[in-house]
Structure formats: C-alpha cells, structure tokens
Image 1 (cartoon, rainbow, N blue to C red):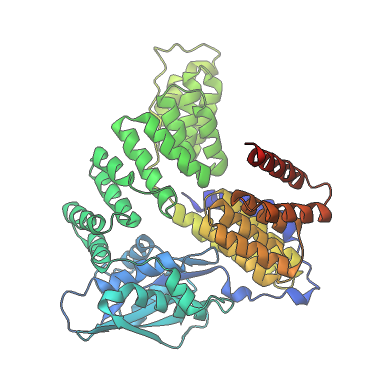
Image 2: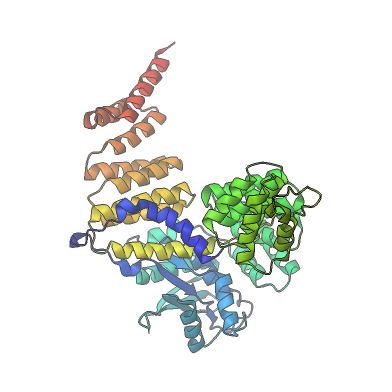
Length: 539
C-alpha cells in the first residue's frame, strides 16, 4: 500500500477525534514529554562475540523478540523486511554484520530515530548480551545496558534487555522491570531457534522444515504458523497454506496478516466462501484498501452485486492505485454501465499509462462514446486483479508518525483534553482489533491526567470485554478512589451481577442512580437485578 493510502486510513482514526485536538497552548500544567512519542527504531542483528559454534542464529533472534515486545502506538519497530531492503540499497549482504559506520549510514537512510546495536557471548554456562542505543537525532551513543542468564532462559534475558532499552527511549515508562518481564510470554528455546533458522534458510524446503519443527514443539507459536503458511502459499501449495494459517487464533497479534494470506490461499484454491470470511475478518479490524479490493474480487467471482461497493471503498482509501479503478471498471461494464466503466478505465490509464489490458478493455467500450450500444460479443473484459501484498507495517509506521504529530500539539495543552484524545484514540484502536495498542493509549491517558477517572473506566471496560473480571474490577475500583463515577459503579454492578453477588450489585446500582438518576444503563441494570432476584425466589 502506498503511503497516501495509509495516511487516509490513519487520518480516519485520528482526525475524527478533532474535538480533542483543540490544544490550549496557554495551559502548561499538561506538559508531556513528546520526545518519547512517535519514535522509529531499527534493531540490528546482534554480533556474536563468542567462539562457541552453532549460536549464530541468536543474532537474528534479538530483532525478532524486540519487534514483538517493543512495538506500540508510540514506538514503531522496523520490520525485518524493511531492514533487509535498506541493507540491499547499501549493498550489504543479509548475512554480513556491517561496521558501525555502515550501520550509521543504513539508519540515516532509513530515517529512524534510534538504532539498537548489540552483541552477545556465551561461556558455556551463561549467555551475556549487551545493547546500545544509537540516537540518530543527536547523534550519540547512549550508555550500554547488559543482561545475563542461562542460555535456556534466553526469553527472560531478552525481555529484561527490552525493558532496559524501553526505559532509555521512553522516559515516561512506569512499568517495573519485574512486572514487564513476567508479562512476556515465555518461548521455548528450541522453538525460537527453529523459527529464526527458518527465516534465515535459503530454500523453501528448509524453511518449511524449520517452521514445522517450531510448531511441533510449540503448537501455539502463531508467528511460526504464519511464516509456514506464507511459505506454502509462495510455493502454491494452497491446501497446506490454508491448514497452517488456520491454526492461528483470532486473538493473536498476527491474526490479521494470517487471515489476509488465508484469504489469498483460499481464493487461489477456489474456495471463495472461505476467502470472503478471511478477508472480512481483516476488514472488520483493519480496513486497508487492499483488503476491500480483495473482498470485491471475491464478491465478483461469487456473482455478488456488492463487488462494486468494495472497489469504491478501496478507491476511497487509495485513489492512486490503478488496479482498484480497473476492477471497478470491469464490474461496472459487466453490469452494463459502460459509460462509468470507461471513466474508470481512463482513470486507470492516467495512473498507469502502459496498462495494455486496460487500453484493450477501453477500446472494446469505444462504441459507447459514439452513443452506440456495445454488445457483449464486442466487449472484452479482463479479470479483476487481486492484491497479494499486505502492508500493516506501513499502517503502523504512519500511525506512529501521526501520533507524534498529535503529541506535539498537546505538549502545552490542557491535560483533560490531552487525556480525552488518547481515550478516544484507544477506543478507535480497540474497535479495529488493536487491543494492546488501545490499552497503551488508556494507560497513557491516565498518566497524562491522573485526576481523571475516564482512562481507568475505559481500561476496566476493555478488561471486562476480554473476560478478565479481576483486572476489570481493579481498574474500576481505582477509578472510584479518584472520584465517584456512574461508569465505574456500572462496571462493578455488571461484574457483581455476573458473580451472583446480589447485595453488592444492588449497592452499585443504587450509587449509579444517586449520581445520575436518569442513567438508562443503571435503570436497565436495576430491572435485570430485580428479575434475577425474582427468578431465584421461585421454588
């Protein structure tokens, strides 16, 4: 996806919150450290400083782990694919560890804020890893951080090192090291090794072998299932691709990308219903132009009239893409609307003058220009074009940049307006499936405006929706310690009612209606409680 398409989508998520963007420049009390927001980081594979053979794969494991642990709405971690493209532009082979001067040029060319440089050594008992941040804005090297652990505890070591780096980048980061490390999902060493070796393997056969070994020892390894499915898809083994990608849970961080490739594999395999379900899953969480386009292609194959609507939505997200205009033209021509089809074909050729298929299709519609009805026999229509590139990374990078822009606006703003912005953005992200990112926005809002209960109740509602009653209750009670609010009491009432704590639920509902006598949700809860009590009273 082109940057313009990403900009349109991110703008729809951020600029729709315009009321919160009215920064009040005179209020200095809401100052936040905007320097820590909206930063881009590239993690260079760590250098092997020990003579122990067989551990070279560890170098690439650090960028992979940091990509998963450090990415957030305010911190964009460059993907491996982006880094390899930068290496290629500098003429650096993928397996070579460049000099610091070359790394500086690579980071400068990538226009990142920080580069993470590191090394590791193994003495036969413990693995020691050191990392330094190269601040590209100064430029300067920040103090080195070091962690050590047994090799079997590589995941714990990397989580600790990630926390060390995060504290250097984000001065507002308040999570304790113990809590941060404990929250990281543990990864079996052999599973991680096979996953990394699969990424580094030169052939598809070797990749498949390593990825299969990774999911064999860790069946819940979503990233390995994703890469296995993508490898099968690239080899046109669509049945195996569908099977591999089908192992990924909907709640996984890679579920959107997995369903995109599942849709492609199912489409290529001729299972259009499965393809439609997969693309709809992605569109409901991240409405990218290429996803709408592919939904349109599948709908066209199924003879559905809504195909044109999907193509129009793709064009709205990215009007510069010639394929979207071509696909809409084909659909319109098939429906007999040759005039509008010709208009879209001309738009296609404006964007891609050498498109021979579009030119031939437009020529076949030429009689319409002379007001002669073209027959189906003389109209030569091409096939709709599906998109095979998934660009969530581009979306995330633009989101981070836009977040940085918004944060700059809020440096001198009223903290209440600042917090409202992050709460609303969190709700938008939550609606599109970005659970972790939404939680980070709510937490940032709480840090910006400690006197507000809204961020904590938003967090409580998020935890409640995810089925985490304990954390939902904790956040609601934390909000009430700041100030009584109907929203917080409503959350507690729902939790108490669900747990059959009738007396506590009645007290919660009573507080809601005392604070807001006309609260509709509170009235509904009162009736629900009465019905439940009556039901229990029956013999």
